[in-house]
Length: 190
Ligand SMILES: [Zn+2]
Image (cartoon, rainbow, N blue to C red; front, side, top):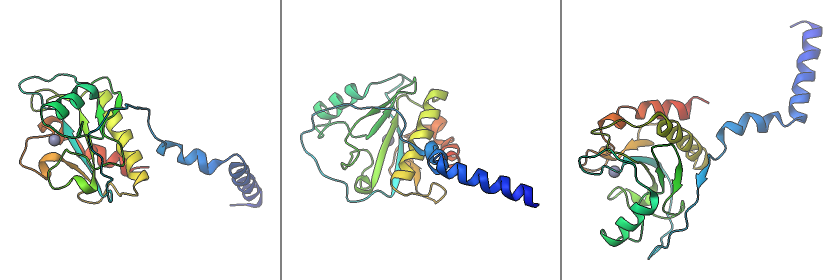
């Protein structure tokens, strides 16, 4: 670097700092658009920690269909007799991210693993169909933000897992399961 380049470089660096360059660089981590829902829960327990993210599909039998967080909340509360929707986030087929259970609460989505994990569910049955690209984009953005929020390293084994890695289930379906590595790479590659 010659003297003139050095001066340009120094000025650019200074201007960058003055303009909040640091903040701009971090913008990619900001919370994605999440549609807040205000469901009533019958009980509430705060999660003692967050060590990993668990990916699910709704897995409606024999049909790859869209679902709303409201419908799942009603089903989990009335049929399963749970406190309310078990997932923290539901991602619709159009890519809309809906808030399910409160982010700080213990979820009900992976037996024995709920106290230290966040449950993210994509609407569909991915043993039959494939996740939409809008859903893939949304789950990547959401996971990247959650990794930042909870200080998780997506490259570490066991940080972003499929439900089938933990319990005896096909969830999140073979067509989503095979794309989990893509999500991990997206989260780590920033
Ligand atoms: Zn599941």
